[in-house]
Length: 197
Image (tube, rainbow, N blue to C red; front, top):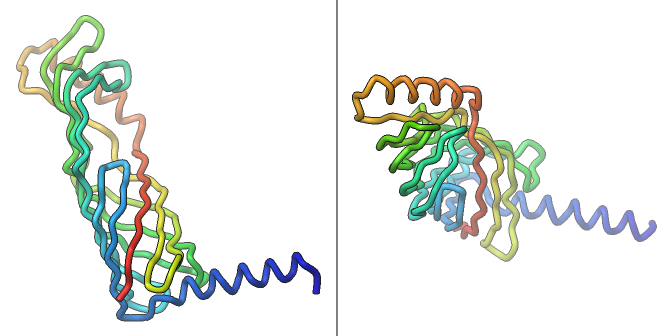
């Protein structure tokens, strides 16, 4: 047996052990960070290779200028949301495929400038409840402790709205939203550390 074979076998055994560290009925709680802010999450192993996870995200607020297609929003962005996710570990190792629902509380508010038109408006997800699909991992790094990560998409575009009744403003919003519909997904990523008990 050569050195490469030993390394490969050791790696596979490590991954297998990491995946089986959680048994059916185990519960884990963790903290992390996502592109929607800091996160608190918990997971329940409902069946072999299947977990049910909940996430609460928020606490991230920025005052800045934000580019939105060809428009600029000068204002404040508050990021946050909730997610209910099912995790499937197809090969009984740390890799997982996940899907669920994302409930957005994110919003950008401020002055929207599109060409010569400026108005007060807000921007958020078109669907307040949107499908979420990710792939990632959950690997044991110490007895009871795991490091996990997710990378995927939220299936929703962005949408601008305003209380300004000016027909020119509403026409500009309709045109902007039509352009934003061409991007039907938004990125989602995060990392977390959790403890199982």
